[in-house]
Amino acid sequence: MFSSQIEWHCTQCESGPTDRRKYCADCDSMLTWTCTGSQKSGLYTNYYRHRDNCDYCTPELEEERQKNMEEKKVAIQEHFQILDDNQRPWSEWKRTDASCIQHTGHDVEQVQELYSMCEESLVNYCSHRNKLHWNNTNTSYLSSMNLLVVTLWYLKHYHSERYIASELNLSQQVVNYFLSAVVDILYSCVYQAFLSLPADLVNRRTPHGPQQHHKLIVDSTFIAIPEPHDSEKRKEYYHAKCPINYAIKVQIAFLRESDLLEPVEESVQIIGDKGYIGEEYVVTPRKKPRGRELTQEDKDFNRDINSARAAIENINQRLKTYSILGGVYRGPVDDFHKITKIIQVVAALCNLNLNKHFIRR
Image 1 (cartoon, one colour):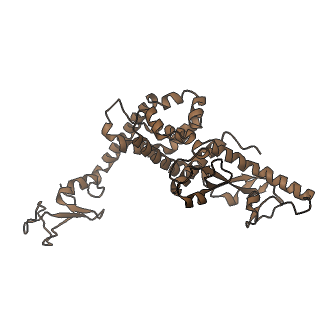
Image 2: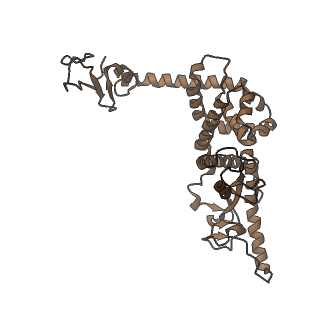
Image 3: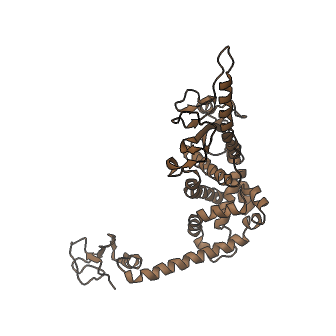
């Protein structure tokens, strides 16, 4: 059966045949088709595949296709749910919150919340990678939930890919591939949810008054890296405060509500340490004048500033509990896109923990 949406023609003799045979009656060339609805085209041999998947050519089959897709989606979810219940490490870590926190940094409820945010992307990834092993019950690959928790385990403890591969009976190449893929999924699904600023931030009010008392507190930290081989790179990444002398410098920011700085000019929204002195629109502690002492007003101001900045120091320490940031980073130091993505994912995971473990005021 041919759809009325299809136009047939011969590209060799530019004729428009009406009998819809496979080959042109005039020059024996294979006919081509064009779908006027989707604007797709192809050779005669590809027509039936197009027709079975085109909403314009077979609208009467669309309901049946949608039903089949829903059934397939449910079957995939049930399949991976069975794997989640039986496959380690999730089958072991989910037994207690203590075990889950020890390995992933999050309790069972938080891990399930993360999974619900990433479920569709994780299932699609698993379906694509594992479709050849669909009926194999003794699978040598990870379920969607296990992909998530193993990636959280990797970020938290920064075990080598070789160690993870040996623990899970996988190849190191497979581990490398899925860790990169799941970090990308976390970035696309979780980062925006936990790090983006509220759209109505300007219109919000706080217990202390208008939104101008939400201050952006900034600080810098570092991620240690191995000593570069190149002398120019050694100069570029030298960091005196780092125990191994070489590091990537990172700036972090924390938005918090504060009534400590109400006397501060409303246009000033950023609080930093003495390293930010001279930066425009940044409030910093006042320096002691040469040969003189700070006034009591200056001391009170600095105490308020340092009290507000305590939050960013707390956040910095929480970030460093993830060994991928707190240890020596083993990845390529020139891949700033990858490093930035990892930092943003870890920051989002820390923000998730803030919902249960608040920063003290």
